[in-house]
Image (tube, rainbow, N blue to C red; front, side, top):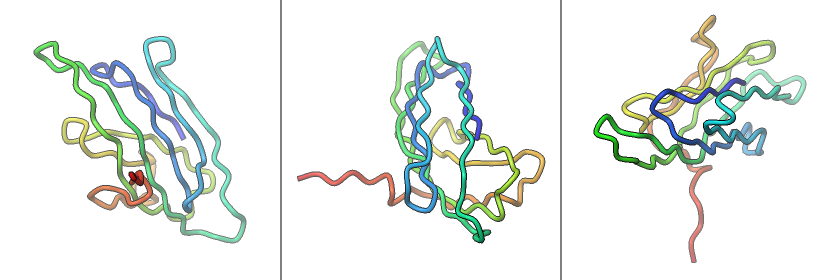
Length: 121
């Protein structure tokens, strides 16, 4: 998986969960603008759930900073050998994985990911 800082981003901390397990953490800023991680999936399975969680700080066109929660989920179909990119859409309010060479291998579920919910007491 590859995650790259967009021009509007000041910083990003995001976590990728595959099948409910933390698979990688991405910390991006002015010093680290891109990070790649190889994610291993269990042998014999071709369907895997994923969730992207965390937060992104962006600079708006007006110069203000905004913090956006990263919380999305989806399904990866036979992901072995694919390179996924983490993308943000809808003004950094919707996040998903995609393999640009084979867009059908990742299915995005709109809405927030349950895996990203933090229990409060």
